Image (cartoon, rainbow, N blue to C red; front, side):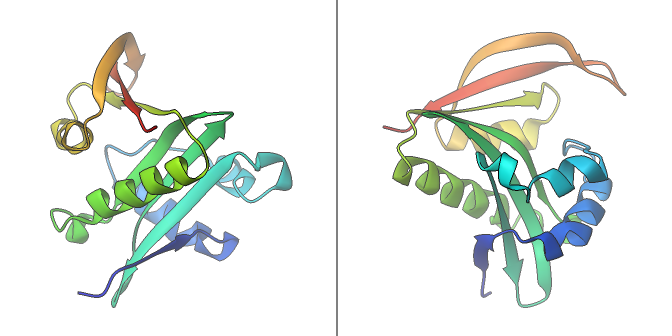
Length: 150
């Protein structure tokens, strides 16, 4: 299977939004939030997509603030899950964060999202906090994770 990871382009927005709508565990953003990714004022944001021979399969979005990065959204198409694409996306993002001088990468995830939590723990992210009742529909705590990358 031939995979490629590249920076997202505005032409990827329809595929990103369509994938996110069907990814129950992804953060659900408005069209405006996705469109803002490609504005010059959003220079601290990074969006990458993963594709295989059949096309668009997933994306990751992160924000860099000085030497700290936060993963804001990550999603892989349903039929492409359990093939290591999330692992590849996350690995590429961590490499990019290191290359750009990041000290740490943070994220938050629904407590019940065991697959995502296992992925982050596989990459040595450590649980560093909790936000009670952070998510809605359904209401649920957010687990905070941190990975030192220096």
